[in-house]
Amino acid sequence: MANEQLILEVKEKIIKALNLADMTPADIDAEAPLFGEGLGLDSIDALEFILLLERDYGIKLKNPAEGKEIFKSVATMAEHIEKNRTK
Image (spheres, rainbow, N blue to C red):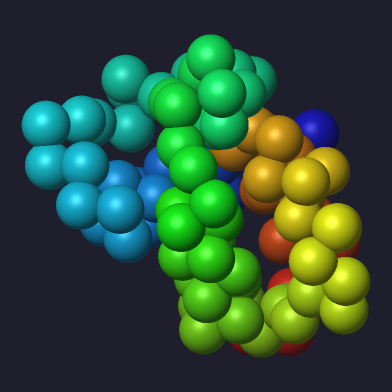
């Protein structure tokens, strides 16, 4: 599992990228689904995540279908970042 500091950083970046001004990192469960029943995000939000990975961590998704697994939860995003970051 990714370290707590990276998980907190990812939560903060999600809040900023999606303009979730009424939320704090503590409001986001690292294991909860980001799409559907969890935060209830949609495909536009997924595009924001792809941009965030490229801009902040130097990670390019080769296949958009990868996003479904990577963006399952904050924890899965953080794990992917930890293993693949170039920045």
